[in-house]
Length: 435
Image (cartoon, rainbow, N blue to C red; front, side, top):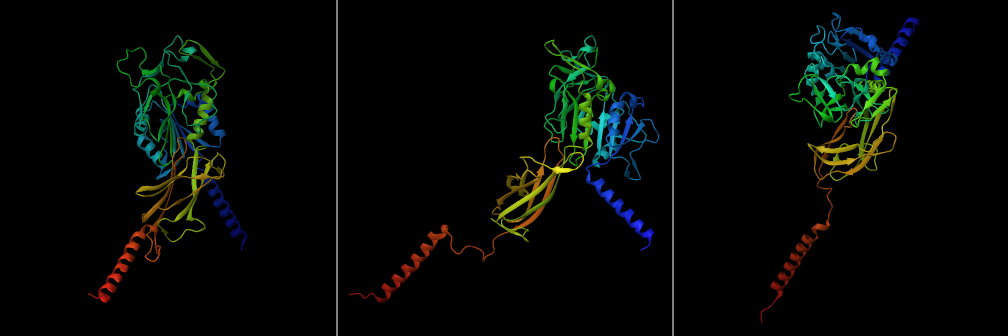
């Protein structure tokens, strides 16, 4: 073989290996940041430096840039979109429909809003069941706010009402500063959940205008929300673009409480919060996947061509979690298996060996048909797992039934007694002589 041919083969092998490694990660590394004004690169520099230092390729474009586009010739140009252009109502290269299709393609979006909210953000949010208040409104709290706003409008809020989804953020040690617009989201949704809420004394209204009707108030006032789509795309809606700013990252916090006491922190939790939420949104954590679903009869190692009713079956599956660098075993006590045909006939919790393998045994129901081994795992903050394997279950053959069953002994006895009675009657009838 010629040296040139050998070199081409080596280059091809290396390219395939690199492609395989790249696709082993749950998401790509190309980010488009759309800005209201390129000055935001300076005012939010710490946040953008964090993205670049995390290994992402980041393109910054102004909303009025004629070269702005996220798709070309039907192919997406980026893996993630950060939309820091809340006041924009019309962009030539990107519409709200483009952003929604971007999400439908399984890609991730971070959207920051503010009081002066444009149409694009509002339309995308509405299609994701997030409703922002009217333009010009702010979240106001006259009881719990930052002390620096004591003589102001009380729109600089301090909040530590974090969500219970600990996988999104675990180490936020101080409350965050927030100034922006309120959200109202669908309650009890598996896909959409609040990340930060306001206090019981907060409400949304226009500053210096009489309050005629409240859009939202109290704990229902959502400041930051998250969407985990069914295709595992992730979207963050922040009601404040200042939440990601250098000023809020480095600012101290003096939280004025409802009792008038002031609680001080040397530094706000904005930086910790923004970084951890971004890692979740870009699928660096909270990503799990299932592989190797295995089922067979108890005592065997390979699945049969078909199952028979009432047989004992063993099922196992492996679930892995992405830790930002590699796939590691996932451990949880709440993974369930359903054995179903339209409706579940069996539902059991799978045991775990602590190394990512989940397993259990069960008895097939006394019903035949095409059944599904289904593991559908939904846990707030984690990507969805849906593993389906279909197998037929047949009834017992005519020559596979037991010869005698306990419940039929009365019938056996009645048949034998009838035969014995007939024999006695026949003997008496034939051999009895009348005197």
